[in-house]
Image (tube, rainbow, N blue to C red):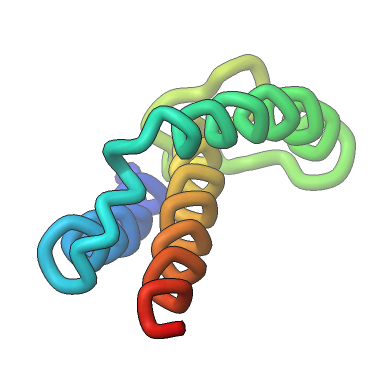
Length: 96
């Protein structure tokens, strides 16, 4: 039950711990990061509605909540990608 949501938790936690405690890049706290997340979430919501309706139909028993046809867990993929990439780019710039 809720397999997809449980699979996302370690990835979200890892990115947050790396960003805030280990690398201390603090990308999560920046307004620019949340602007990028917002823009990509709009695109994710639009694209995933199409994908989940016509290409891949998710198993409702394994999803926590559906937004239209899209499982809410798909939102975490976008958030982890933006924070993770921003964190790596910021950390890479500190060394140069």
